[in-house]
Amino acid sequence: MPINTHSKHVPSLRSRLLLAATVWLLAITLSAGYLVPSFIKSYLIDQEKQQLYLYLDELTALADVDATGKLYLPSKLSNPRFQSPYSGLYWALTVNDTQIRSRSLWDAKITGNDDNGYIGPDEQSLLVVKRKFLLPEIDEPVELAIAANQDKLMATLKKLTHGLWLILLTMAIGILVLTWLQVSWSLWPLKKLQQNLKNVREGNSTELTGFYPLEVRPVIDDLNALLFHYQELLERARNHAGNLSHALKTPIAVLNNEVALLDEEAKQKLSPPLQQLQQHIDYHLGRARMAGAANILAAKTAPSTRVDAISMAMDKVYAHRNVVLVNELDSELNVAVEKRDLDEIIGNLIENSYKWSNSLIRVHQTDSDAHQVTIIIEDDGPGIDASEYESVLKRGVRLDETTPGTGLGLNIVSELAHSYRGSLSLNSSSLGGLKAELLLPLPRK
Image 1: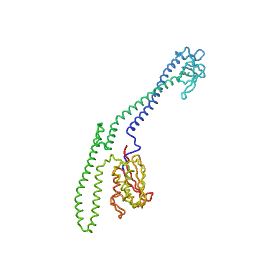
Image 2: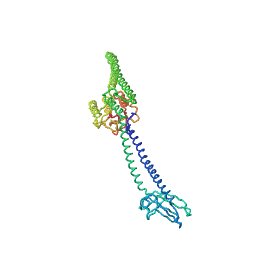
Image 3: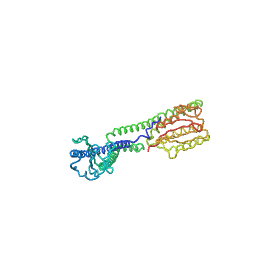
Image 4: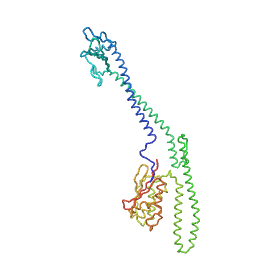
């Protein structure tokens, strides 16, 4: 199976780093936006209560009983707000059903409880502190209450909260911008590496150049060593192919000369195998030289154009069969396969179809994903049994010995497709014959 190193769902390093920073900043900002106002509110309420407790102590010291046994205050509290109606600062003394209260309460009362809150004049929300104590002249305990309007306190807290959120959002945006700049600057060597790899892939360079950080430098050195080794292997294979070609040329020429001197019966027996041997040697040496010279990283070929060229040649060779090939491939489609290799791949498949089809061959495509395409070549011939689909792809397997061939075509197609990280699979065609599905990579952008 071909190895697909691409993924449609894996985010980039930049996206991962920015997403992690965004999530972390969002968590911190929300936590701070919730916790800090809570701390400030608790602090402000505690400060207000401390002041109210001072008034409560003062009220406790002033509370007294007159000669008739009634509760009263012989003097006023120090803060004049207790004398101004609805001023927002109130006190009340309660014993049994009797209550005396500050002038600031006027004709209103403090209502509510600790659970649901307290309400004062003009529906003011009150902060209340209470205390109970005993006076010698009264049997029942006296309840003292000091209340303050907390609307101003809440308004102050609201302003502080808005200011805090503004500061937090400004800081979060600033940190995100700095993080983006830091990530971009940190990943710049990888972007440079990507450009260098593109130059190598397009054949504009043979190695990765430039200065890289210490963390990346070992990878660059290993990649350069691998590229050098790859180029050396190609050069060595090309040289070996040339040397083998020259080494075999003389013995084969001698054999041809010797066969020519034999009688006609012996010549007819030995000439065909010798010619076939020569064809095999030329064929495979040619492929070895071609593979050695091909720049597989920069390969890009339009299969539609190659199908048209191959079909024109096949129409002449198999003119007597009256076969029609319909090319439905997108003219703009390119695959990441070297031109001569693509001719070898498609040529073998189309030639098989010309040999076995009755009258029609159809060539079309289906998009596998953003990085691969499937080219389909199918005919209306007799096809082959489903149990033979895998075996015919093996080297030297032929289902019909009466038809000229070596049994190497489909095996070569499969191996060439695999060398480009593609694949070849056979299936039954809707036309009635054989369907060859050729999975090939698309050029990288």
